Picture 1 (spheres, rainbow, N blue to C red):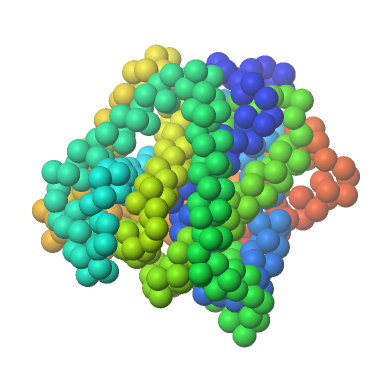
Picture 2 (picture 1 turned 60 degrees about the horizontal axis):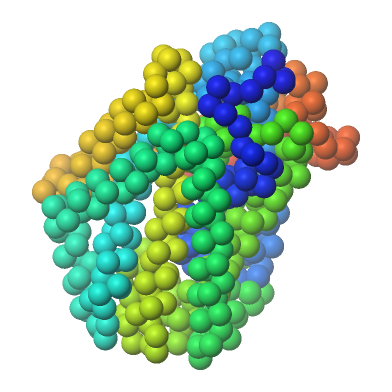
Length: 449
């Protein structure tokens, strides 16, 4: 079983896998959320805690998802079932794959709506629609967009088609080709924006906001925020990394590869912060504006700066690429399942899943306008799907994956696949058996309460 290939194909090299997995991890949250929570929770002190959490929680769970996918060379449900049989344990563990795949589908349905906002803003920045706008005018523009179901539906539909086109083309002609183009483009845009930010008056303030060591802000809540983000930022608990792992070359080291992905993901988030916050500080704006930072504060800032329209356009293209690479990875696990389990043609499986996600997304479009009065447990469709995926399904998937790999899978299989030194393997085993399940359970309970 160890040497067979996935029927979907294989990444051309270890570095393509690293870029694809990083593309999955680097999304909308990375670009604005990590810099913001860093600045709010003690800057450099928070970054240190976050890196420890990544090392002992995020990386071990990611290594686990990769080795399960690569060993079985199947979709998440098939991989967990296969490894359960090989380890002579209950095949009920395959239910983890179902939780992850459903989480991915649910996330896609509202993520594509937010990505649609980004596409609208690319058009607006290109035409100079917010040049010279005040905060009130930018806020009114954004609220007007949310209140317009027709425009939201058009962009939601366009983005869904963009993802379908890539996923339907397969691992090599679709996912890999897109990764080769989009990830270098993302890195180049990020560095250009960083260069622009360095030329502003607010660069020193932005640097201090993110990296000044302020241990007085490092509360217990801040540690839990670091812990939660270290798990969510790497796209864990959704079957994505397991599906991508199924296409990973056999010779590549799982341990070294995953460390590279974790490092790249963190570097992108930090550079994003250094590109965004100097622009905010240069214009005397509030860095703690949350999601409003991206769609209200930043357009105002760009609209009042030299060459701001051009760099504002580059910024939203960057966000659009990050959203696109992440969304592709959300759809892949379920498409792989439909192809492998039911023998569907890849195009048919992708279109079918795309239609399901698109239809669910209509309720998320309506959450801000014509369906805003319809709630489930006090939340509109958009907020409900966001809540159950981020607070229940993904953490639950992470906890169960750790328990499965740590206690149910034969240790020999993990050792064969992960391919690290005995000391590093022992560290992985302790993390996956004890540290990661406990840590993610704490985040799980904390978020629910």
